[in-house]
Image 1 (tube, rainbow, N blue to C red):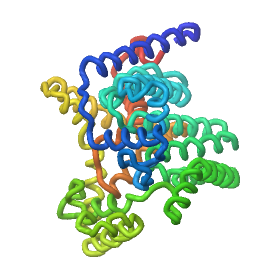
Image 2 (image 1 turned 30 degrees about the vertical axis):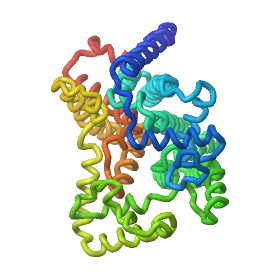
Image 3 (image 1 turned 90 degrees about the vertical axis):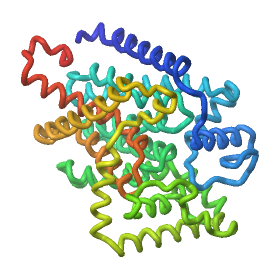
Image 4 (image 1 turned 45 degrees about the vertical axis):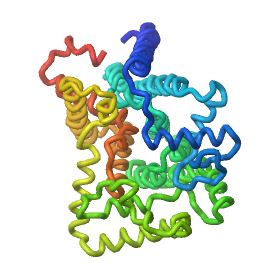
Length: 412
């Protein structure tokens, strides 16, 4: 691909991604909000009205089971354009296009320009990303921030810079404020750097800087939690209930719904004592594991597979688009991405393409974290762009075995 043509092609693809997103958002998608959407919307409206981060309408009761970045994102839009879901959808469609561009930059850096445009195209038009760009939920913003964090990690491996270690940690911390899943990711990155750096002293330095930067990024929220609840809560409470759900072997570690949670049987005082509820569920979860450790290990493996078992097409189905072709194409794309993503990961490790290792690391991390808790298809959306990049590489290398070099436009 000639350098002069590259910006024009990028601009054209971005324009098409945006137009397709607008077409879906305003011609196809449904308008009924889901419970989580109501929750985010209420919190954002409370921020705009001066009540602070509260999940109760027109209330200043501080929230403790959510992180602040997505409600703040909504609040900034509401304050500027009014209480407009359409304005939110416009910004989220633009975020999908930017996420695709980040995926292009990653693929270009890792694979020396090969496969980059194909990755760009696929990320921008991947069905779950298009669907969730129309929902008032944190998935699209979280996907954008996580992709940006992984791009910084790739750059860190390439340049081995203290500044990039600092920037990577800051972005991981900011991502954690959008979705708490990445709260422990800096420690995984630290161990990863120790393994892949030749200079262990440099790895130690970069790893500690990255952890410190992530802590600095979340520190304002940690301080807020301490001032509000007089307790050290780095990010949020609510992990232990999910952990308990994930240890419920008879129910397969599946979410029982709010009515199935044990704390609903408590009196009002205990229900609102969030630290007590957290400790209660942690004790219950540990007891479940102690009673049947072998069963729990088997359940972990099942949940790891369940995390990727099906695509996030439930949103499409709720809009009444139940045609076999639509559902079948989503499932086919999902399983092809997984299959070629595995092939791509194996080839990356076999050929020691070090810059691609952060992509494998974040997929492994997300799978493990959610296997420990409970699985929901939409929870894997943030790592779809890196999976698509690996799948594109796996697909391209597989196809290259059967196609002459002169007939491989995806590598040019």
